[in-house]
Image (cartoon, rainbow, N blue to C red; front, side):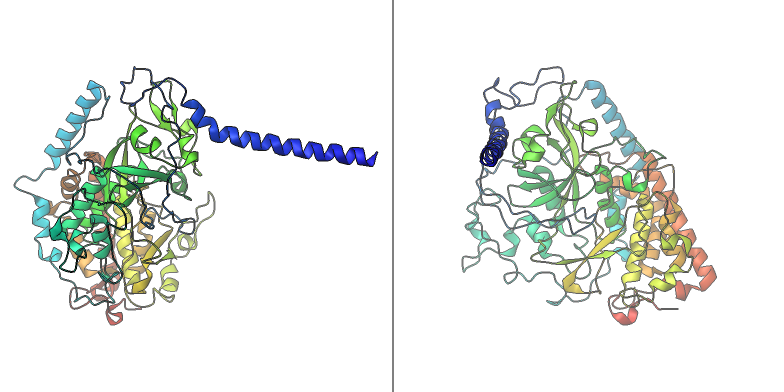
Length: 558
């Protein structure tokens, strides 16, 4: 009897195993079976047309995949590092112009409203005579030179740390071979590297990029025009973000549009459950540059074809399976993430075009390690609990006794970041990063700005608490803020002019631009109150004389 029961048990286990194997095989074969449906879909149909042959191409053929970095140990980081170069064939398509695109399938009324918006933005914010932005960059405050750079001050040494060989990659990144790009020894010169690599090479102890670096403008165009060869979901994070790889082997982080320009964050939303906005990432890059921080990696807006540039090129099965056609005949997908990744919160195109921001990757972590720091003024990220700094008015005194804030320039960097976040209304700054090579004497990288520009009708004063508690600010920062408060260098006008260069212009509506001017006056008022209370020399750190990066010129502890 026992032998019979044992045999039945073994048979049952075998059957369960066979059923499980059959289900896995069917799941893997499902995309190929779908290929037998109706054929031919470019998904460039009008919204009223029936999408044809949704799965005609089925699952893409497998090829060598790019090894992706696991970013789960980088909390909240919006910009991630690129990995080793991917081998594969990719034709060098001619890139379209850098002008503003027309949304395919967009209704005439939508286009008319968009044109009216553009004209209103330009009319209100365009400089009266010439470019105010160009005039700003001619001001002495924007012409300060850096100390002489040594090998210890640059992130990479060309031809020793960095080598890029298109022959080894079996493909040229610019689509045409120019013999003049090679040195007499037959090696490539640094000037012939792709723009994303030239951006990486230019990073140093003091800045992500120089003020008038033409590589940055070229990189912004690449983010918009380069052909997308593969797409994968970024691991970790609360909302959906995609890692996009281009034909020149560059990579960028794509944040799709979730809200219209006019929508504000609902008043009942907590800061940690707010949407991440693609236009906030774009505007943050331009604002950071105008403030002369230059600590945000280059970001550009792009109109993406969800079918041809995401679904058809992804090797991520989890992402691929979330695509569907909505009742309105629009292409939609939702991916996988902690928040807002469901059919109810799907991202839908018009009919398959979607806006998004593309942030250039920083160098690979294997080449340039970055250290993640907990922001001392991090919020509690809890519905009821408060952070220590919210209940202790003397909290800054404790911070100033803690490395790395007890010497060097780190505390002043926190003040810069505080002002930057307040101007945007960004409450989501729980961590920040620095390059390990430069130790504690380097700048803070301003990553992950998607929760800025959520409310133009409300100024979140708690963002300024680090400044009100510490009463410390760089003289260069204070002087530039005073300059940007003047009518001839009005911050909102400069940001609007800078954003006109982006393909998705207008990036911000006028109320958000006006809010920046209002918040700038509040920052200057806080600094003025600190000076009145503690004296100018104890509040404003003079970094305009000599090097600001030596420990001797760091914050004076009082």
